[in-house]
Image (cartoon, rainbow, N blue to C red; front, top):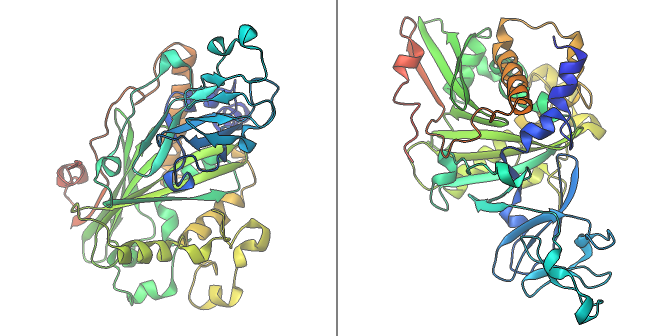
Length: 423
């Protein structure tokens, strides 16, 4: 369990909080490129780390992200005119470019203008792999953009999307590094007969209490879950945690396309979070539309699972995730359709911010415990003037992997080649 003070340190991400200071030392996914579909398109509201922002794409195609409030009188720039290289406030016509520079101050006499001395609060932005990323920290601490393998691939070779979650970011992230839950929360009763031919699901049904090992790294940690199988072999799955909110995981995939995938959990505010999901093929092939559609349908993230025009699931907290008790008794452990909704049902049920003072953790929670320790240490590092773990890396050179192997073989040795990024 955690103390109330440490739980507060880990979950609060607004300006002036320890975790907020930590988050603002890394590049954060702000919105999908598709949300700004064309030059001079309508601006979009964005909320991150408790701050209300506005994003826009200028006449040259560059993405900008700034405080929603106009620095003149505080009117919302969401209503602004996106035109000729900048966003113009509708209140008095002041206009700002993607860097926050004031380009025009038309309601002031020419001899009294001070636009060259004025800047809107804007954030550095980069567009990589279908995502617009932002750095929200102090300019003098600007870190390198730390890319991962899926971000380095050519267009069409990776896929990324997001969905809304209605609870604190940390309980969502901790769920992503809890390998034993998949034997229960995501279980179909047919797994015991392997009717769908998916071996990894079959392994999780056969071995419900995996052994866990964590190896800390320069970017976070490598987390192995080891399931002993009836035939004497072990099924080992290695997941990577990249500070402060990234996950990489490996799985067989569908349509004969083994995949590496993962999540990023970024706070909207202390009680809401964006769950980012990405994937690419291990062998580097371009992702066929059929593969993407099959994976998204299996995870419960295909279009039919969303409320139209939003990134919120139809199955959500307000309707008890459309739980079907009949389905729960006969074929689905939860009675909830879709892996993503199953995760959120469990994680959101803990409350807007989970009370970790009442927990009773076991050996299956070693990754959760390690995550908390690393995040708390990173907060202390910032307070004591040190760079947080992984923030100065220019590239992450690992990937996730899984394998069935003889039980006496060390997993780190057996999977050494599989854990190295190729791109």
